[in-house]
Amino acid sequence: MSYLVPSEFVTKMVDAGESKIFMSTRDTIIRAYMAGAILALAAVFAVSMTVQTGSPLIGAILFPVGFSMLYLLGFDLLTGVFVLTPLALIDKRPGVTIGGVLRNWSLVFVGNFMGAFTVAVMMSIVFTFGFSTEPNEVGQKIAGIGEARTLGYAKYGAAGMLTLFIRGMLCNWMVSTGVVGAMISTTVSGKVIAMWMPIMLFFAMTFEHSIVNMFLFPSGLIMGGKFSIMDYLIWNEIPTVVGNLVGGLAFTGLTLYSTHVKTAPKRSIA
Picture 1 (cartoon, rainbow, N blue to C red):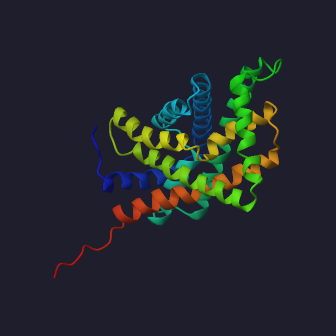
Picture 2 (cartoon, one colour):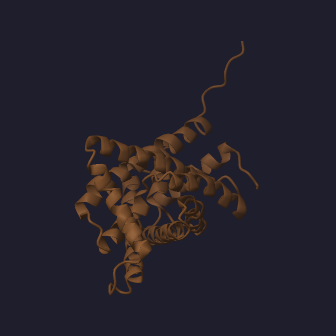
Picture 3 (cartoon, helix red, strand yellow):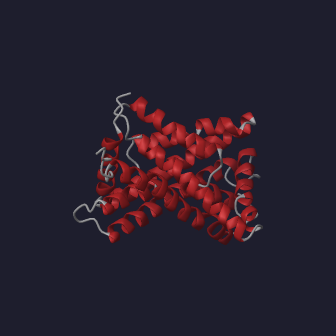
């Protein structure tokens, strides 16, 4: 599948991070908006298939179609830039600053949320016939997810917060591996296969993805989920974002960079 060796694709990761930092505000927002919207539609698709088949595994197998689409189109998720842009800073690329990295993260966050929220509103209209009926089965399932993954953590207090944070870390370990997967091949089929595997794993394990949650929880609130905006922010979105940042950077970005770009001296055999 025209495989690139790690030293080649990790250099591509650093180059990609650098280019995203210097991207214009307009382009950053547009690409993030479309990424959030497409991933939200993929989440709807996965939940719909789970409800129709009664098998969460089917939803997990199919969910990566959205991730593959958005990355092949060159759109950006917060979970991806969390990993790529710091590498350009660590590599001391000219003109790359902490401020530039934080600017990119902020713009991508806003764009992702806008895209995911747009789909949340549109699908809520679809699920309720323009808010004229109760949500259909898929809408009820989404509202239930919102309650289970906010109040469900809150009832365990600090232990629930720790669990949420760890699930956010594990999520972006896999999602960022999918981002890297798009760089290890020069063919479309190779890219899709490499992306599909870790994304399927994260969804099947119900790890916490900040962008997917930007769709699930607002749509759950719109359709009458029994949790509040503060429940969503404190007991899901904020800890998930932090967990996504730590997990993706620690387990994917820094490990690959440290051993494939900044390699240790070769072992002496003298």
